[in-house]
Image (cartoon, rainbow, N blue to C red; front, side, top):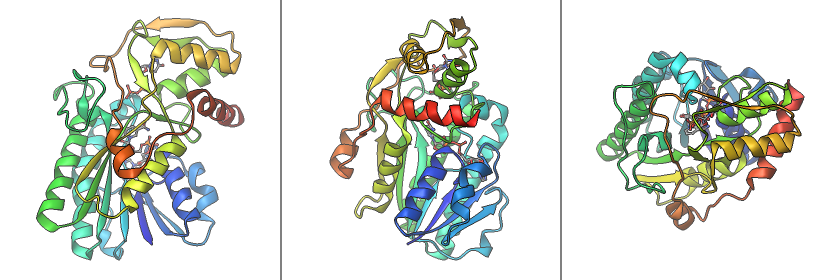
Length: 313
Ligand code: NAD
Ligand code: UDP
């Protein structure tokens, strides 16, 4: 198959590109490296069947490309620190960028599209765990809205291209994912706590650490995304992908402190506005339609991730 991955030099995208190459697909990556890193794709782009285009999907001339069998659309800053640093780029990438990718698909009759959406479309959820039917509790005018609302728009335009032009679209609502190839300074909970622990700095827990997240190891996420994109008969489906193993942020800090054997102190810092209090995916639909569920235990995944950061830093 000919596969296009927007955002393929990022954390999840680079693992997905590797997975597709291992399945003998021809992979084209478009990435402007705003939050991704060339280091992630260096081992891939030297392989036959992998092409890297350093470009912004908001301005790239898609007329230079022919059709693809599957388009994985992952381009977007993803961590709160990064989308706060690049709010306009985040809005434009998910709105204009998604529109331009879908328009390219319509023009070239490219059949299948997977949108990397997010659990952030549920906002600070009032229902727990979050099912796909839940419409969310999102602030449209706040520090997270450049991401949350842009992703909600991306879902809406994906839906509309599916219904209007018959493109076989699928939406993955990705919950917090971690693993090797995360950027050490992306500000996410796992990368922050690991880099703090291995460099002997204080572990910064925001608020009192009682807010929860459910962390999914990246290889599990990539399997889920691949199944969702490649199985037949899933057009117009929206599916949560994530690990239902819910932990408080304080628990995550303690687990990482133990795994790294660190003497770092846990310190408490102010929590950001609209930080979701509880998050856990209901993955019944993924189990039923994809035969998928996460296989990597949190401690094991964190050990692999700590090893990655120890080698990197
Ligand atoms: P990432 O920042 O590592 O990867 C995103 C990639 O997109 C980067 O390489 C970046 O340079 C690229 N990009 C951004 N804007 C672009 C543009 N205009 N043109 C071309 N490339 C552009 O983030 P990630 O964690 O790998 O996330 C990948 C996708 O999954 C994102 O769409 C994100 O919203 C979604 N997601 C991730 C998580 C998670 O926990 N990692 C959770 C929910 C959703
Ligand atoms: N967090 C924290 N300390 C940090 C980084 C994050 O306590 O140094 C918390 C953050 O407040 C949030 C959770 O960890 O409640 C997950 O944050 P992250 O930025 O990884 O992703 P989010 O799920 O908020 O998008």
